[in-house]
Image (cartoon, rainbow, N blue to C red; front, side, top):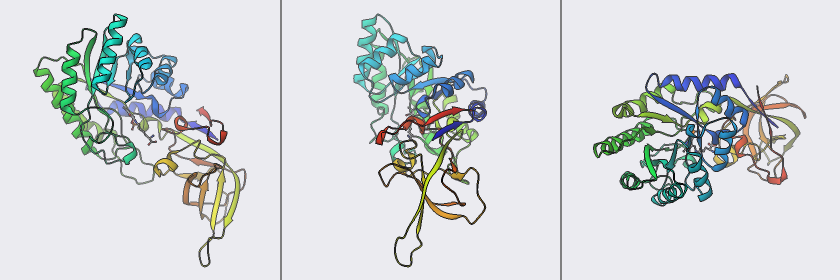
Length: 370
Ligand code: LLP
C-alpha cells in the first residue's frame, strides 16, 4: 500500500485557508499530527505556515523540516517533564499549558535553566463541536484545557513567576467540525476572556483557536468553507485586535492524500437462504494502514483506478488483518475487479499514515509526494 500526496493541492489548500483570513493579522500553525511526513511538513514551511506540535516527537519533526523554535506552538494534554524541558530550552513560541500543575512544572524548568518560557493557557470553553464524540474536545467532561475561571486563575499565577511570560489563550474544541456555531462560540469565549484580562492589565499577543475545520468525505456532504470559517471566528477576535493563531490539519492535508492498495483476493460468502451473497474484495491495505473506518466508522470513498467493463455490484472492501473491524468500506458499489487491480481510498491524507501501526507485524505503508 502507498499513500500518494498531491503537492499542488496541499499548497492550494494552505493558501486558500490563509487567504480567507484576509488582512487580519494571523499565523497559520500547521497541525503536524495530521501528517508528519517530512516532505509534507517541509512543503508547509515553504508555503509560509508555522507549526503546531503535540509531542516531543512532533517538535523534532518540525525542527528537521527546518522550522525555527519560535515558529512552533506546543500543545498536548500530557506533556512529560522531558518534553517540557526540551520545549523550554529550545524557546518555542508558546507552550499551551493545560493545567495549573503543568504551569508549575514549566516555571520550575525555566527557572532551573535561567530562562523565561512563553506560555499560553488552553481553555475548555464547554462547547459541543457536534462532531464525532471521539474527536470532540471542547466539553467540560473532556480531559482538555481548563474552565474559563480556572484559566483566569492560571493566567494570574503565570504573572507571578519571573520565569514565565503569558503570551496567549488557546482552545481547540474538536476535529472534523462541519458547523460554524460551535467555532464562533469558542472564539467569543476566548475573546471575552482576553478582553477582561487586558482590563486587568495582562498583555497578550495572540488568540489560538486551534484546528477543526472539517472536509467532505462523501460527495455532497455539507461542510464549512474557509470563508464561512473566517466569518465565524474573525468578528470576536477582531474585537481584541490580537493576532489570530490557527492550527489546521485535516483541511489542508486530508483531501490531498490517497491510499492506493491492490486487490489480493476475491470471494463470495453465502449468508443465508433468500439473502444475496456477500462479495468481499480483499485489499493489501487495512486498519494498520488506515484506521479511521475501524476506529470512528469513518467513510472514505473507494474507487477502482482502472475500472473494468461490466456491472457494478455492492462489495465489502476489507483488509488482511485478523479482525472483522478491518474493513475499509462496506456495501460499496464497485465495477468488476480482479486480483492485482488497484483501488484508491480517497481523502486519506490526514490521520492516515500517522495513525498506522505494526499490528500483525505488518510494515508501514510507503508515502510518496507528487
Ligand atoms: N490543534 C489541536 C490542539 C488538536 O488537538 C488538533 C487535532 C488540531 C489542532 C488539528 O485539528 P484538525 O484541523 O486536523 O481538525 N484522528 C482523528 C482526528 C484527531 C484530531 C486530534 N486533534 C481522525 O482521524 O479523525
